[in-house]
Image 1 (cartoon, one colour):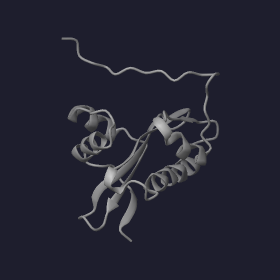
Image 2 (spheres, helix red, strand yellow; image 1 turned 135 degrees about the vertical axis):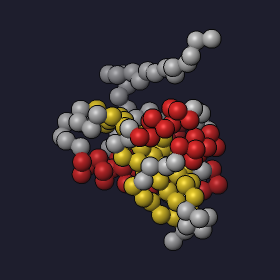
Image 3 (spheres, helix red, strand yellow; image 1 turned 180 degrees about the vertical axis):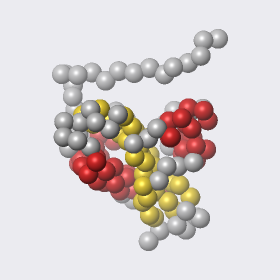
Length: 141
């Protein structure tokens, strides 16, 4: 089999590069290093035909009890369309069901058509009861 899924945290540089090539926002090396170290669970997809290069990933972040968020779900564009996003979500779902307590609220922000993947794992839209919001911290110049 060409691909394998592992519960493993990607290297910070691999993480940054994969986010950018997949069209997600760039992160600084400091932000990536801190964030990755504070993951509750990380899943990577490795390409066994390319020296186990990280070509997909996903993470679960949060307090591990009351609130958690699925983040960083992405697959390198040249490997998309092969069900690898579903593999990542399955691995995270196994972790969630095995390790998080009942009543833990797990959320995510779905970009574009990605919501179709997440509904397969019981995620539901929260609008209009709730509205997702966010901002990116930037240094003042």
